[in-house]
Amino acid sequence: MKRQSMNRSIVWGLLFILCGSYIAGCEPKPKITDKNVVVIDDVQVAEMIQNNDKLLIIDTRPDYKYRLGHLPGAVNIPLPELEPDDSRITPDKHIVVYGDGPRNTLSHAAAKKLLTSAKLVVYDFRGGYELWTKNGRETVSGY
Image 1: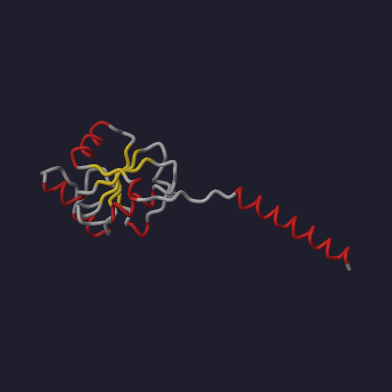
Image 2: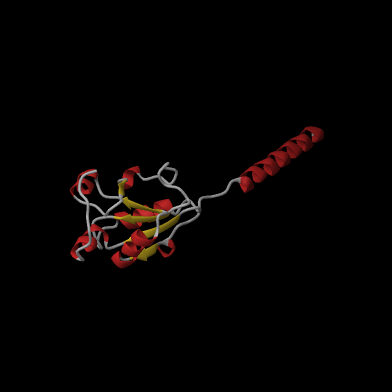
């Protein structure tokens, strides 16, 4: 009986060591907070468009709003469809996300979602489409 109890202890000990090793090898997703999100304005976005060919601008608004008007070169990926592993999103590009306007939280949520991939450089254009058009900047409609 004593030997059987000792064998159980050894088995449980080995299981504990194996599980601990497995868990230690798993990398948790980074915890993203509001402090991780870099907020930029329309002047900075315009400069990035002018100076940077390694730029991806993501319009996080619904498709119908995108079709009515969007920033030049922007692609439409609504927030519910946005995933860091989307083939259009690559680590060699700086990513700017935007929504409707300064009170809209789509871009902020999108930036946090994309920042879960530690490889991406993401900016939240908080003023969004509203600020862009208010300041008389160029827009494009359709696809």
